[in-house]
Length: 136
Image (cartoon, rainbow, N blue to C red; front, side, top):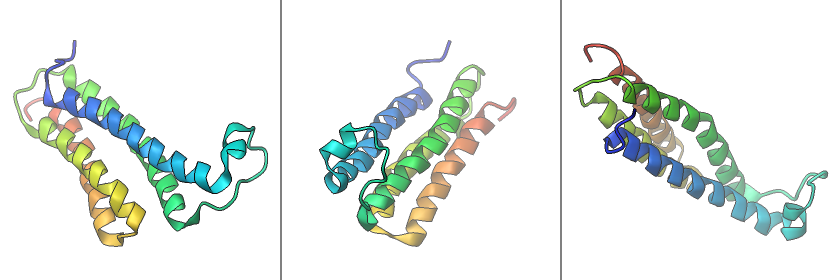
């Protein structure tokens, strides 16, 4: 059974909550640009363009949902392996804070810092997985 008090599980919970922030950040500009009838409808026709920031927020959301399942899997695997190292805890924090930084950096269009935030979050996933290896 995973340790519900571990840093990794806490970061998993925080990242799930952050996912709601990403979702709302993508949905609100979509509804504002396309209208409530479109948002509540079947969406058979393409909606109005989102604009640059709205499109960036939509892409950030899609990027989040691409990486979050990997983070969940890494944390759950690591939680099943008794380890004393700190690499997984550091990795979980790196994932979370990298994803926190990624959203506004992408929204305002900061190219290189956004990539650094994405790379940090991705490295965090790798660190959590490394923390599950014996002897690490």
